[in-house]
Image (cartoon, rainbow, N blue to C red; front, side, top):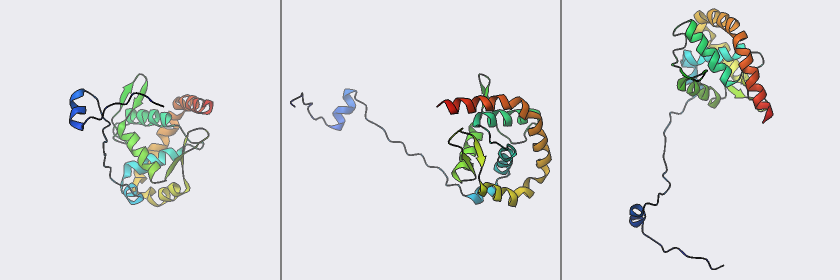
Length: 164
């Protein structure tokens, strides 16, 4: 049991000797409630878009879907995308999706990792559908036109998730 014992050194000596300690970062985030979601038409549009998919859709497919809708109808959602390879990435979209998950309006299926609107999400959508009434037809049409292009991406993501 006798091993080499390291001599104790003070924190000042540790800083000068080159040893790095663990640094704790505290990140503050605004607490989001369902009322905040109801007041944000972009989140309601995103929730509606997810609800259009009967069997759910993967986050990657949603990212492609929103990107294609943004490209066709400039500014429909207002997300800025960066292409990483062939995959569109938007930090704002991921933050909004996290908000919908946090508030319990959207859930991720454990089995195939696809996004589904919860019953609470459907209730909120029914109550707030009037706020996006002007966009509903355009979103539905865009979804129907874009989905055949996005479906293979969704299937691929589902297959990768089921292998894990």
